[in-house]
Image 1 (tube, rainbow, N blue to C red):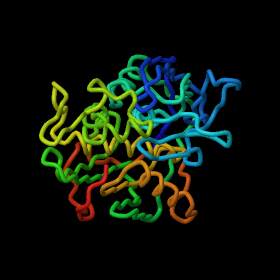
Image 2 (cartoon, one colour; image 1 turned 120 degrees about the horizontal axis):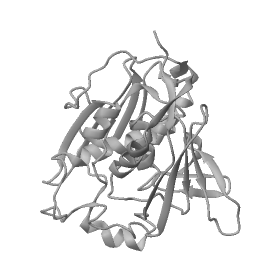
Image 3 (cartoon, rainbow, N blue to C red; image 1 turned 60 degrees about the vertical axis):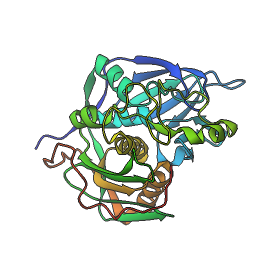
Length: 315
């Protein structure tokens, strides 16, 4: 059986935007990288400091409230890393250096679609080195309050099953499960936008969050309607975005996953907690080099085996 080879971009690609929380302008450039580099961030234009580089790995996470923040011993470096990481992971990119000149990745339209389009424009290159998978060997489970997450063995590849429940008529309970492949990621997940409730805006602003949020980059919900003139992109866009975030957060495993991730009422904090629980248990995973996943189901479907929904609301 032919081994799976590592990938990178054929050329660099650049995106300009603003940070959804900081409101600051930012330029992000994704560069090709050699085999074995993995995914790495380089932060430039830091006042009084040289450029700082950090690997996109679980150990670099410094905060998970409203976004996944990466940093080092000197403090946070890159906030809202999850969308660009989801695009890279969803398209099967193993090696890339993400250069960013501000404290937060650009939110673009609130989804991963602009990052996907930028990567597709330059294309991918296959490298002469086998892929290294993080192969899940036994289940790992984490509960945080009313949220529940687990990761299980799956020799067929990487699969995400998610469920959300909000006490809101426009959302309610939504479930989605899919095998994460480039074609399904592009079609089913990449365009799902981040969302928020109009009732929370004042509180978020006073806490220093959502300073760059607008109808151009956030799906905004009032008590009885969606404010965005174009409406939702999917009838279940809310759970699809939760799947997008999970794919981005789990890209911090250090390699593509061979496993199924399930979450109920999850978010960045839960995604990170499950990944930490997996990596800290040496018997629960192993490196698997050059392995090709077995053929898997390719289309999104309703999750049939997800744990029961919980009733209290979380955002």
